[in-house]
Length: 210
Image 1 (tube, helix red, strand yellow):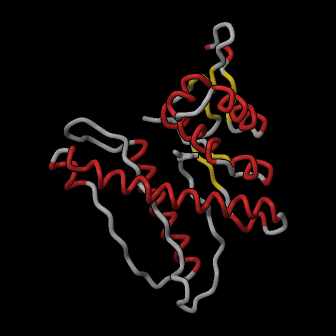
Image 2 (spheres, rainbow, N blue to C red):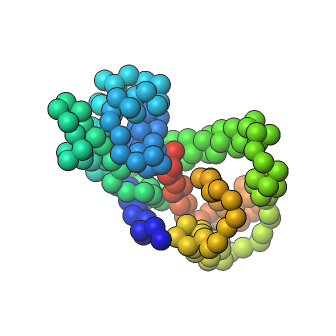
């Protein structure tokens, strides 16, 4: 069974640091694939080692990654993610316009990543078995909920996801990493009030997935 996920609730300084495409990709790579050097990350992400090292240090200053000195040899420095999940609420930054702008950028970025990953799957799915293609699906639903009901719905879904993450039970055949996105929000223009927003947790870069 996996260890309990560790979560960082972003401060204003951290959200400003993380609102950068390469930093998000670096953090996501370290979370998904484990500790790595700046050189290997640069190769994986198609950038140069100098830029990768600089942005890793920025992430370290913000407490989002850290060095693993025991794994280093000579000038080779290894880095690891400090947390598996990044969370935030935009309302936490209502008094900090720069942090609020950074959080808004992160929200937009993760929506774009969701679209990209979905398109990647549609492009690649014919290379997967019939069983995988039948198991992978997406849907939408329209519900009429109060703020409290929406929060309870999200909490219930979180419990199900956590159960499948830590103890999915028996299964046939090889396992794959599966990307699951949940994005429940009011229909704009429906006449309802506005609720607090909860930032994506994954990682992304859970993922990519911060």
